[in-house]
Amino acid sequence: MEYKDKHNAAMQRKKLIVDEQIARAQQERGVLILITGNGKGKSTSAFGTAFRALGHGMRVGIIQFIKGTQATGEVIYLTQQHPQLDYHAMATGFTWDTQDWEKDKSAAEEAWIQARRMLADPEIQLLVLDELTYMLTYEYLDIADVIQAILQRAPRQNVIITGRGAKPELISVADTVSEIAAVKHAFQDGVKAQAGIDF
Image (tube, rainbow, N blue to C red; front, side, top):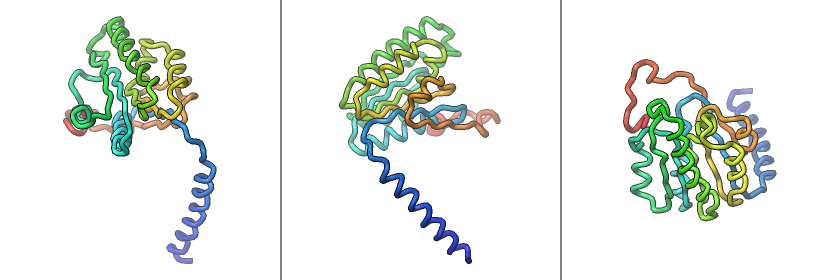
């Protein structure tokens, strides 16, 4: 049998499996997506999904926890171009720069108030909680409170959480979990972070 014949047979088998999975997937509800791991691309993936949702005319909320104080390219573009976006940034800078647990905790709590507001808003169809995992790791926010608010959100609302070191409790309640592995990073070889690529 030639390769193309083997390939065609394999694709026919694959199509049967995919068609069966599509037929089984009949629930219509919002999902909780968790993007974690040490590799580059967690926030980038979440923002890509935000662009996708905006392209479908959906209302999108974004809360950014712990980021640098300079705006990233995606935030600059989104906040200038899209009235369908509700955006809030903690904007205290990175924890290794602030070195002030109480100040960071207070800022996280203020950002969480905005997150709770968006979680309760059925008009927001996608909510990105960027770098939320750090808020739990550093105990700025109570994990039980966070999980309860997420589970009690509007039924059709989708939520994406990003950040390294996701706690097992968060992994357990998520519908989809992706772990991005760190294989290589240019920064480790001394390449300076670049606008449009890294921020």
